[in-house]
Length: 271
Image 1: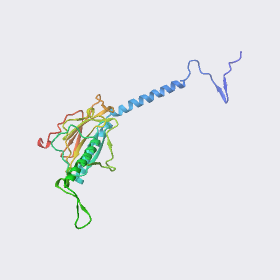
Image 2 (image 1 turned 180 degrees about the vertical axis):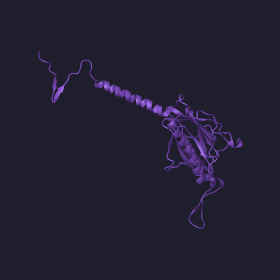
Image 3 (image 1 turned 90 degrees about the horizontal axis):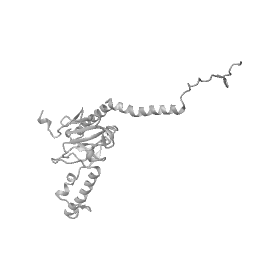
Image 4 (image 1 turned 135 degrees about the vertical axis):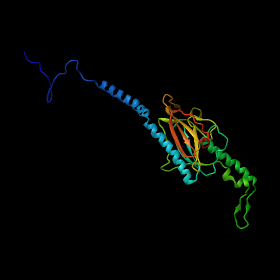
């Protein structure tokens, strides 16, 4: 009897695979790779978040920015405000066009939107035109060809009566900052707020301000920071964080958990 011939291929002999011991098919390999990629995409970000390293970095940056804004106010003699966009976790530093900015004693329900501030400035200009008209007509300058515009105590005080104009501080140090994309501001309450500025009530365009004055005084404020479930929903299954300002030191402290702080309490009276 002759021996069974092996399979032949160019360049040599290839033995037959034993029955039942075949390798993975292409489809099986693709499915396994896809499953591994899915697990990596879902599990790794969550692991990194729960490690706390990202959170610590973001919160330390935010606390450092509060201190930097206070130092800048002292150095320049200007008035500033930190504007926080609640759902995106972004914040910017803005400077007033004058230093005489006052919070006042009235507590507002919410901070104005960008459009509301623009509308208020436009309404002021339209109203102020009536006061200019009441001041009378311009008169000719007897010493020249120029016209002397009408004046009155009200007209002369226009720059102090008009709404404050805020512009972003634009330099390499103060580009727009963010604690996102995985964190958001759940709510913020500052000295000039009558109530907490809550994301759930303000909506996607909601923002809140914390003011910094020329002497370095940072408005008393408490900010609650949460993980983001979606664009408008904090993830309450993960522990939040609390940042509080120290007005007279121009600094901020952070701590784990949702801590209620009385932002209207004057710590200088209790120390």
